[in-house]
Length: 401
Image 1 (cartoon, helix red, strand yellow):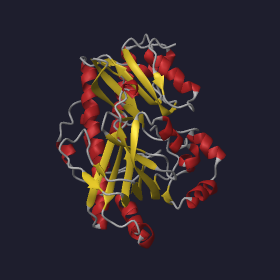
Image 2 (image 1 turned 120 degrees about the vertical axis):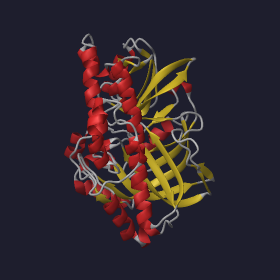
Image 3 (image 1 turned 60 degrees about the horizontal axis):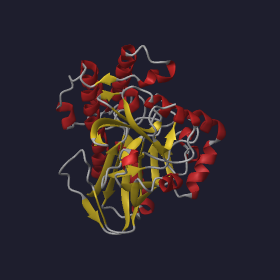
């Protein structure tokens, strides 16, 4: 059993995820935790798990896709473009996005992130060229870029990102808007960092039993701890740059102006103060939800995403879910559903799918509206996004959100 009690949100959480939280809280560096309603079993810490530690960073508690991120951009194009000029939107998605493991741009895109110090760790130093080739691309698994309809019931100011102080937000009136939503992370370089430092952490803690081997940590005042922390921060800026370039390219191709933006990380760790002490908060598949913080919580390719504002719930360590959460594995989804099943579900909801595998079918996910109801003390819904034109990887590649 865990040494420290924690609160969990939601009722549909598998036993494996609960056991992983108990294992995490039994660590000597663990200080506090919370489990979000979209939680399901992952590696080490469950996806949807939030863990605070004392001066320690756990690579697997951040996740394999470091700084996986959501970004929503509201464009000045009419919603009618989805039905009146769909070929232009389809062309923008197919021309300006690239998906898949190892996928690279035909022509490199430029961004100031590539001028930063990539020597902060041996992995980033060796991976800079690869990272540049993948800059502005998306991954596999549940990563996507899609157009949809954003609905606001009342005027809302969007666009503030705690990681980008000074970025102006856009106040939108109540109504319906054409919006672009993307989900992806730090690509191959983030995965290489996670693999390298997870191995080093495991070697540093041979005393850990099998059930905790993916929870090995570094003290932040060690060389390895500082390297991982600096590499993680760089991947945060790199992931943000990926989304920025994708959204900029699509808006440019459509000659559209940006009205407002919202974005946030989920696989990341932050230094924060909770219960009167500084801790390192790992949010593995969890959205920062401090008081007033904006974020995006997606459902699936055929169900809504929600723009939310955090309520700053201390028991959740200022966190919320990062999505609906899977209710079955990718393999189980492919055994249970056919492509015809998936396409019928999408057709009923007016969604056109450009590419995706059956493992990402909406029926493999929990009910996003039930998840939102279960965390209404964590976030306030300020807008609803309904996907209408979706592009994902062709399917088959395994990804951990």
